[in-house]
Length: 368
Image (tube, rainbow, N blue to C red; front, side, top):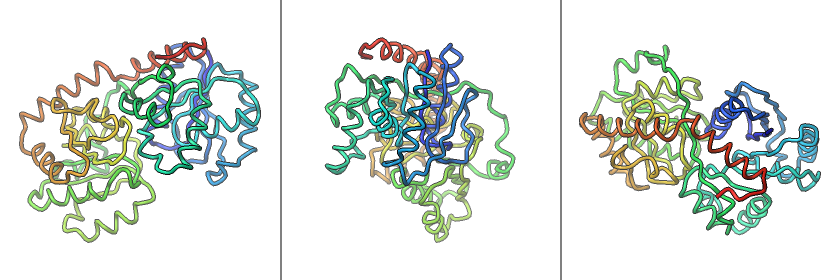
């Protein structure tokens, strides 16, 4: 079997990282995988197989006939059995190429979010439903996201299946990253990892940390990631008394090393699918405090972490405080979380489920 994996661009965000890791495991299982990024980016994707970069300008994504033709020529030349579009604009890109240049390879959409949270106007609904109706199957990141997708687009339930993200089995360095050793030795480090965009709710994250920091001088916040809100958030932090204990670390390749040595992972997002970074924190046996959005409740609960109602800032503050003082509860929850991840969410296990779904699609069968 040959599979083309489409990603938005070379960047170290969840969809691209997981698609790369998944592709590595699929290739080990005997599938021929070609990973293709559509738009320009500067990061190196962690896939060891064949990678192509179209380097197309994002502002032409709705009328880029040259790119659609290039992709159509690649499809006709390589004759893949299946194409997987991994979030972002990849579905639009694949379907427009398919319709205009008339190739017949089945397309699977990897749904990584609760789509209903993004479809907030009639034109968005009409446009997205048009593209969704062209796919042979959808593989959703969580059960909640699957149900939302079916409801939002009236999508046939037999053509959608939930297969979660996973975690790579790996040996993690026993020391924090060299440039952060002093911080980790001096403070209890809170960590957030994600793009600096509105739905990640970094303003609330900063407010939560600052509230706890007012009475606890032992804590420090590292924000890993970048994005269009960085300057605004840095200006907000500059006015806080805890400003010297908040670090914007940008994109990093050593997030597991950071998580392994963190005191807690905080994720007060407003919109999510099922973030891989939560599973990574659990794998590292780092306590997780998260908002109850998207599919997060499928892995974070009273047994495995601290799940907070969206908008309950005080509840989030209380949970962070509990992590800092209740060692017995922390040990109990992180042990349960680690057992859950290693038992059900390793990428080797997840990839096998993708492979079976692909076989069904190629055979013209329903996947559920």
